[in-house]
Length: 399
Image (cartoon, rainbow, N blue to C red; front, side, top):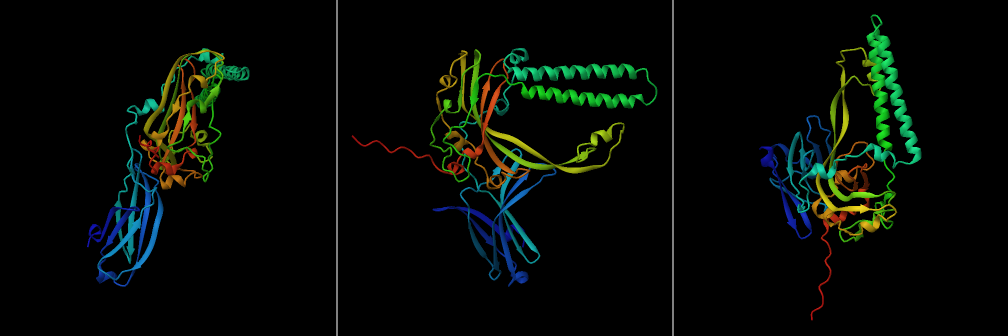
């Protein structure tokens, strides 16, 4: 008897929720009287040639093989669902092991998720283009930050001049000098890149705009002070401050999206675990030894725009919150995004993350200034609210 004929799984809807009806037809000639073990597990499978899979065991139960048909019922947890995305697949698998035989069957637990608010341009929502004037941004930096930027620029200039002098000196040298020059160029280029990255990291203008989480919310796991479907906020509950300069054409946007996360294995050549492999590789054209390393990958999906407003002129000294005081409707987060799956919910302290998550981000966009962003930790959201219908207000009394 084939695997498909011996094991059948069907999802049923009952008054208490969904349940998996598991039908197992054993080969009594081989396994009568033997103990069989059935397992139900949720599995996260990255779509990669060298994936790092992960599973969460939901059920383990043993029974004695005595009949030509064994029927088992598994009540699915409310937070159990399957998912097929661009990077990960979440699937539920039933495994029955009896003797030396192993039977497998996957089944779907679909989750009804809306799509009316999904954005067509995922890239523009998640990574909006940021064109800015470094000259104007520089004069909006604090005095201490301006000093750090000038010092880093001076260091980059010194590195370039020093490297140029070494190259001029080396052009008149003899054999073996090219290896020294190559080493110097690599070191100089690495230092220049580090300096430039540091400049970009501190190049955030002092606009006077501050983001905050409302004080009545908590990240504690068992706290009841969470964001729910029927929570009421205004945008000014999250954005405050006094404008430090005239802002023309400033745009505030609130977006949310799902995140597919899972690691994979990649063959790496040359670099050692201590990070010094690049030094050993200088002067060597061959390095055939490699090893498999785990790499984390995250992919954004199902992006939605919750709020989008452009202010033509926000004058210096004005209260920022007064220009963004509209209601912030967060219900689409619970209706159009997937909730965190059972695997992802248990990965908060892991080095490598598996599963499906979500996030919400405030984006302050300006035509010529560096854009600002603030990400709201998903721990502020109530995951149970994804599976509950919004409570409607009672109908008005007749008459």
